[in-house]
Length: 470
Ligand code: SF4
Image (cartoon, rainbow, N blue to C red; front, side, top):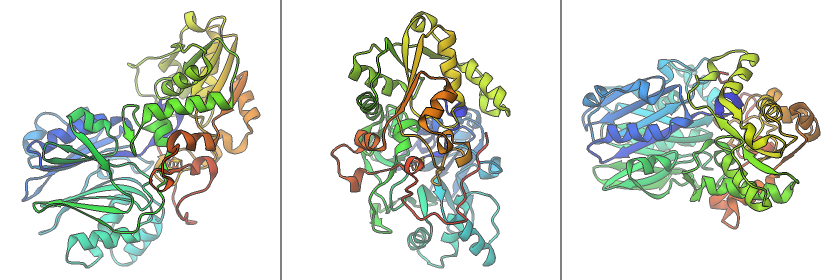
């Protein structure tokens, strides 16, 4: 579904490249491919071996960069970032990469995720005299690196990483080195590719495809990679724990043409649709998916049941962005502007409407109504993920617990609220089976905490759930 009307939002996307004469341009294209992960800001930092060059701004990648910038963004290495802004955390100063300049050892940082002990670390840093100028976790990491007292930056980064907890995929660029790292459980996705002799890194492999890079492997949980003129080196800054890659990346966030942890996202969604059909079959005339992210699951549901798949819902791609509209009423208006039911397909039919998830229920209610107004005789809603009952502390905006319709309503109550003739969700076992299948849990395991409440890391009383713009 459409992020801005569903109330689910990814926090950001990371891209990095080392060893390419057009590093800034490649990063620009990479960020284009990752644009769905954040639309509030974008930035690129390059190094030419002597100094870091930065350009960043608020808005879409296309709004932030023009041809002129690339004459200044010189160098053989770059890191880039697209960002979804948190409440009070929007604005230029929080757009990444953040650059920290000093006479020697300037560095730029970009990261994706959320630190569960950021609050405690900020207090500690401030008590020690650090002045934090942004509300971003990225700055906390930078201060920890600067204050660690280790002369070698590699050791300083390892030491800083051992202090932070939560979910993070990060890139750090200095004048002469690139560092890439992933949290010990690999909650956020990060892949390694090659483009000729250059190394590339991206939150999603769709960024590799756009620039013609080939996939090499995933960054391993707890891994710290260093690339410089001496080549590519890797070490573990901590022992890897069982992988718990965010399952919502497969369900909803990532692009269907991306492979996450060596599983294609579209294929995993089709399997989710098939599992859902096995778990909650229904007699109907037509299956339709809510565009875009639910179409794969709808195809899987259709293939498993033999009920034909049709384009019963169409997305209007050229309307304005609705998330800037403040009220619930206007948001619903936004749904109406963005989606249309195809009367010729659904009129007089029993329709299975497959969606990837339900957050607040507002969007589902509106779509059920759209289908019924277009003449559907029955609307059976099938959700290709379990009910979201808990907030995410790892960088995904799933709304607060109170706003999650499944946190305080049974499936039957939700069915009634959204006006469906029947409603079923995929089980947590079915979701895990769709992603992990017979693969090794240690390497391919997933986080399902927003469904189960079993968080894979400690959660502290002062752990902040990012308050997102709505
Ligand atoms: S809690 Fe949910 S959204 Fe957050 S990382 Fe885990 S699966 Fe992803």
